[in-house]
Image 1 (cartoon, rainbow, N blue to C red):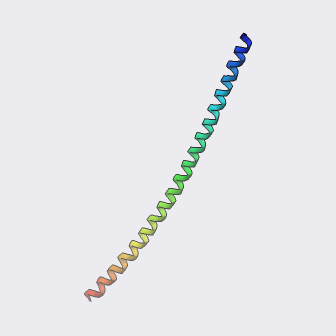
Image 2: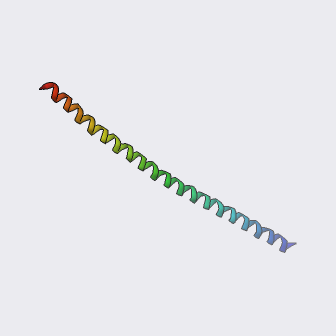
Image 3: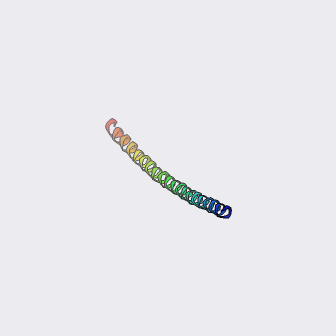
Length: 72
């Protein structure tokens, strides 16, 4: 009866370790996906920022040209 108890305990320990390994792999994959998503968000935000700055530059230039023509 003792060897079967040891086998049972060993089997349970292996199952626990396998489950822990699967969870660790899943956690690492989620971490990687989070990093990828973060990088994508940073690029999108940078594109929006550059677009805003370009629009602002054009708007300021057109505003000053309008003001310049009105005061002449």
